Length: 157
Ligand code: FES
Ligand code: FES
Image (tube, rainbow, N blue to C red; front, side, top):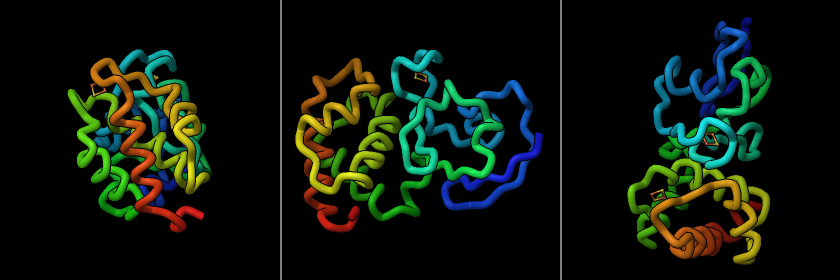
């Protein structure tokens, strides 16, 4: 079917197969391979993208479901000041180890900070509760998100 969507700020009109997952559409059709595939069943959060501002597991969404919606992937980083600040702060705090979970973590962080400019650590834990990291103890990730909030203070409304 034909869908109209906005991916990382760019409007597109494209034909998608009815049985294609959003994850495969992004990675295979649009070559946006920053979105990672881990468990393929909604458990790990590696495939997290934002749909209309909310973090979603793209392995559980069909491509046709983004018709009329706006999708943000990790590749939007360079075009989005807030995402850039979050990314830089993750690096400053030494949050990534292998890095596989990071695109999903960063997008979950953005989803939180766009809604809540002054989150508590508990809010942060809740926001990344669907994102699994096998390398870190999560503390540096939480620290990076809290520090990002401070840097962004006021900009997220
Ligand atoms: S790959 Fe989608 S949640 Fe794990
Ligand atoms: S840094 Fe390796 S899975 Fe999170």
